Length: 269
Image (cartoon, rainbow, N blue to C red; front, side):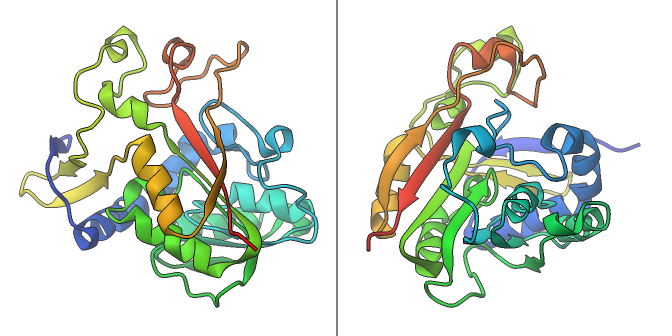
């Protein structure tokens, strides 16, 4: 009989984090797609559990004729939407399992939506300087690495002057609350300023999954250190007609405090 992983709060180095999360996403790729694929859509661009779509938000600007890189693309839904709008897109992910799922989904969508996939670490992008007009990640990479500052520097490196880098991640405020969509998730149980990682491990103590926390101020400093300018911080509100839970995201919590933060950044000319 299988047992649930044990969770704890403790330090987790960059290599340990990458190894654990790569294995976790490899193992969960098919199940994740089965659970969330209908919500995300194979050729749609949904930024977050609050169901904010790029077609409505326009955070990446006019998509036609852009060279776009997605980091932490999962099975590539967002990239496919951009390709259908006329962008030239490359979808990347650390996980071979997620890349494999994305390639399989490509076979079942219109040809104009299909995108190439590259398996790579978002901290070491295999692309030349100034290769892309736009770089983005929708809940990929940023919360799953110990050194997110390196991810931002790499995104800035491959971005052309004047280009945009946009990333969506769990709103830092959520760290202080239990990951529970119900009433138990409405009470602060730890400090917002406690940056100790959340770690899951097996019975032998082997790390199997890690998430890292940064405050809003930490994120702003990472953006500035990468040589980027923060143009906007979007905190999507929960729509009145949206009644679908996603893990700790729910109508109850979403109408009281933010669950997602989207940082819209620009590389100076």
